[in-house]
Length: 206
Image 1 (cartoon, one colour):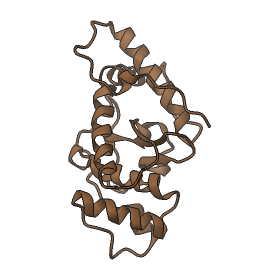
Image 2 (image 1 turned 60 degrees about the vertical axis):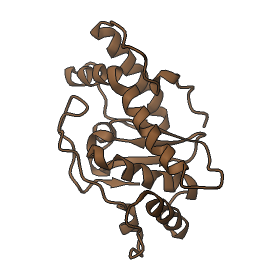
Image 3 (image 1 turned 120 degrees about the horizontal axis):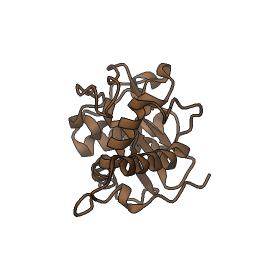
Image 4 (image 1 turned 180 degrees about the vertical axis):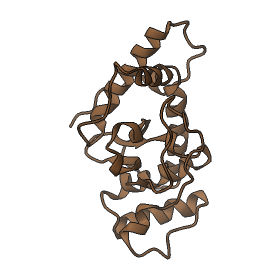
């Protein structure tokens, strides 16, 4: 799969935000949604652009997504710095997974290995800002080790945890434990994406 070419302003902070109408910000937020949606390896996303709540979310995304992605890129760079060898191309993207995926999936982050650059999709709205790096670390470990939560993943995750000051998963011997490592605190800001409440601490990062 060839990912869409994403504009650089999804990452870069402009010197000043343009004096746009709400409709223009809505269009920008919707454009971002359309370009990130193909990177998510799930179909039948829950999304209704005609609903008032989704229009508010898209306006907010249009106004703020470059800030979120820049911060995620800084955290991803910290992971790159833990490796002396060359890592594959990796790009993080903020996206409201909890609002578009089926509720039973309960995902705060995912890694799409089938595209290049590898995409780390992070729902920052579900995670306490102090713990964003924890979810990035988990997904970055997938990016360098592959799918699943076997020995290669545990080795990569241990390396990143030691390098970035998190407890390594040395006592975990099962995939379910690794699936939730390093643990993160859910966000207390219930309207991060300008909409519904964030989800509980049982959400997983795959």
